[in-house]
Figure 1 (tube, rainbow, N blue to C red):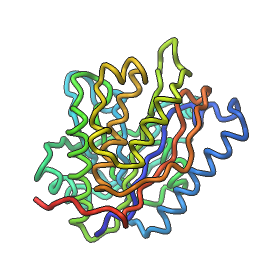
Figure 2: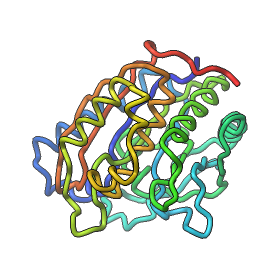
Figure 3: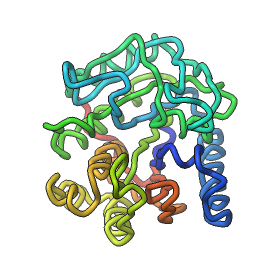
Length: 281
């Protein structure tokens, strides 16, 4: 197989933009877990990384909002936000148009997916890259799930998208890392920003660790909205990684609610050696 790594991380802008305001002990432990993930990806021999994020109206809007999209370019510029606000300098991340095209072609065998030859990276991808590829020397394939503008793709479709990404990764000779990035409970850009439902987060992460498909797909958007905020819709990225991991069990390396970051901060990964490859088409 050529999917050599699968994991999930949080990506809120405060993680880098308000670092000095966080509890230093929690912040440093979170950053250390992020760095451990960087080292694990490097040790896996990954030659490219698919970064599966949530759309924030950075590249798509309600005039044309795909449920799933994959970048297909040789480089990607970011961040679109003010670097001083986000705490991340302007950068150009390498892509691989040929690899993206081959992955997209395989994903299309089972899941309809949009693709974009121009893609500007916002905090959803810029924050993870800041920690995971700080030298911007690993080609990336930016990938999005619509978690912003209803109607949203049902969770079982996010799972199927993850399975399609796994089959695509296993179809190419390059070693591929797959990282999902989003929030769990959070209420961004609202008066409730900074609220975190820790109990809900921990229940979700328990299901995620067990890779329990039935319970992960048992959430409905109305209850997620009520208990985890509109940012909770981003569990779709975590669910997709579960689909890609094919029954492998996971480990949560770090979780803590950090209110100034406005999200339950998570670093987690799956042991792919314990999973099974999805059925081929």
